[in-house]
Length: 65
Image 1: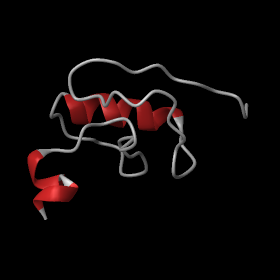
Image 2: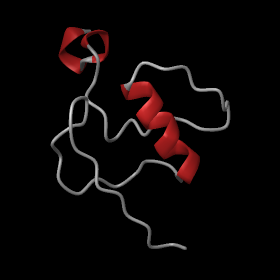
Image 3: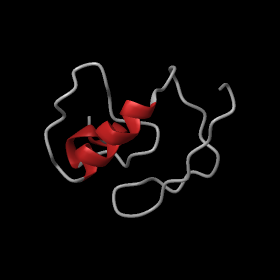
């Protein structure tokens, strides 16, 4: 389906309002995102955490470069 949406809130999630993904996303990316937030390894190399939803980690902040 072309009209899927996701609500995300909590620790590690940005407060952005409506976010448009930069790339096509898949259901397995939701799992990868949850595993990333829980600092668990991602066993599926085809899935990726949804970076648009996540707060940057300390070393990834734009102003810290």
